[in-house]
Image (tube, rainbow, N blue to C red):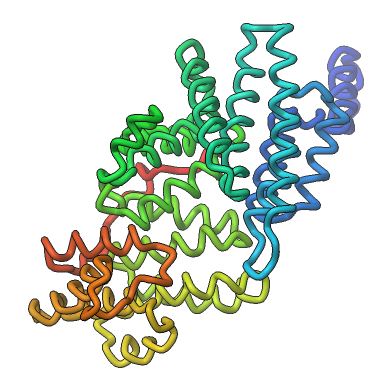
Length: 406
């Protein structure tokens, strides 16, 4: 009876048939922006084949998309960054550099045709800045400086007129943070080469990238969490990024960078047991493909064991740090003794690290083989002034915490 009544009204029946027809049509094509974001997210999951597939689909759909060449270069960049020690890295970095140079050339040509195009100015600035990263890998300092500064200037000019070009803030944020972290002893060199930055502004730009960048949100998260994890003393309320760290690791579990930062951040912020749990998981999940990561995992575990006051394990780990590279172990011992209220014993270990930089023949050399001398000495300076203390587990509000732009 109901169907009979409906059938008596042709207009209603026509609308019903139209709705049924629309429901059977295929979904609309994926937007250029979504394809680009899918490609970049696949890269940060180290899923290169999937990323290349998305880039191919994007090139078929819109061969003139402004960030297409930048994305292609990104495949070479992340492959080069993921390579382990024991091989010649120069061929991989050379491929990435050539790809970014091609992207720069294309963007410059497009800007000659359309000088006011914010899209192509973004493509130019981003390609210039990431080209600088490839020249770091190739050890070409002058080119690194030239490309980084060019990218900085291009993107600064862009956000003056188009402050909503949110992908630009990843490069500007990294520039401000890194340039703002240059040691005071090299301040004259930074002044000579017009390299100056503001760490606080850098963090603000990285936050903006995480929240609003359509393409580079994951990279913004990776860099922001790393800064908060490794230099919490320079990041306002660093522990507030724990929820972002958890979200990012869940979204990008294939990428060891997110795991390492998660461990450091949780160890620093009162969640030592969670840090240790992820440390054990990381050893199973990553070391086959990323054997170099074992060094970082040992450092994080050592730091976490000091937070847990586990002296037997700290002592057991000393042989993992080769002769003339035991500064990390001495740092952990100093932290352990600070937690026990044995300040003089803590100072003894801090001073061993501090004195090592002066090449004193009577002082043990614990820094020669370290790749992170500045970080270690910076940590020692902090704990010589203020004893190391554990903090209570950081309380955060999930509703107001910083989240990755979907």
